[in-house]
Length: 303
Image (cartoon, rainbow, N blue to C red; front, side, top):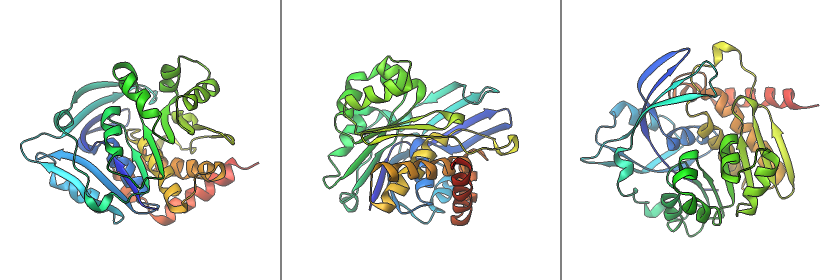
């Protein structure tokens, strides 16, 4: 089924214990699309400024299953930029700067040929912008969104309205607790579903993910990696969502067993992302490497 993602494309500067990278491609839409494209076609709706490097566009275009007809390069505007420094515990990071640039302007237009999209993923951005995008997809059958602590802090009402219009929500454990004011993730997940979504996926970083669904629950660990394979966690959550949604689009189903398997594909995609700065890990991924890791992950998690 046709999958479309809306969100941010940016330019990142990242510092980790493994090194640093300046001016690499980032953004929620970027990592999602790259990961999802390893499992099937994905359409992109996003906007960048005229300062977006040509090599970044070439890198994104190198993924053959990404449709970039919905990517707008806006003259006279600047691309979203973010800088961060990770602690030795890579679950913790400090934001060094955020330049919103084009994100402070009107959202990008949606191409007419995208309006038949059946599966919509609203990657992390302001919930009012996410909600506004839904009008462009009248044939949508499954809508899943991501969010973050900033929007819970400053746009809770908009986020609450969005939750009533979507089928699934993806967020991390601290955000789930913040949104629901509950410290227990099982209770937090149930409370989020009471706000509107049918299911919720709570990301727990190196500790995997938790799924709450009307038909049951599921828990998956992260892919076990040694230290040499852990370089930069930026974009891992978005890659996880991309792998998950790529599988749901490929199967055309959204029942509990299918979502559980989708979480595994998301985990495999994220394990490629973390191995290099920027999109390097996903660019190096192949259908064979994805399948090999998926099979290995299945054997690890079976009992």
